[in-house]
Image (cartoon, rainbow, N blue to C red; front, side):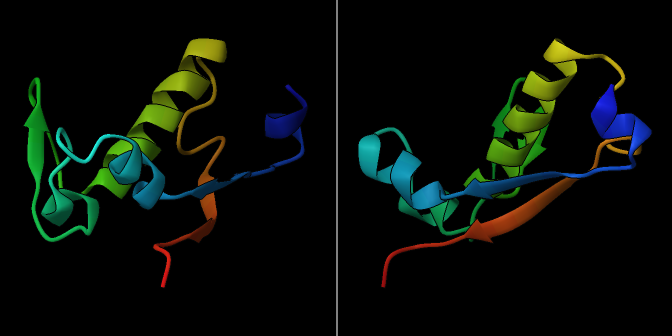
Length: 83
């Protein structure tokens, strides 16, 4: 793949706020703010942002099994919460 052969990273913008705002009854505010964790299956995610990054990695691996964290790092361009 061009991404791997050029040593590129996958840049993305992830906003936990939008996930929380779309389903505030299912996503605890403390989890969205990163002050509490949750376990899904056998994996514990320290925050919603962490779970969203893991979901992105899973999607990349589904597209191409060589898109591992060592060959295609994920870099957060921006993340945030409205002020």
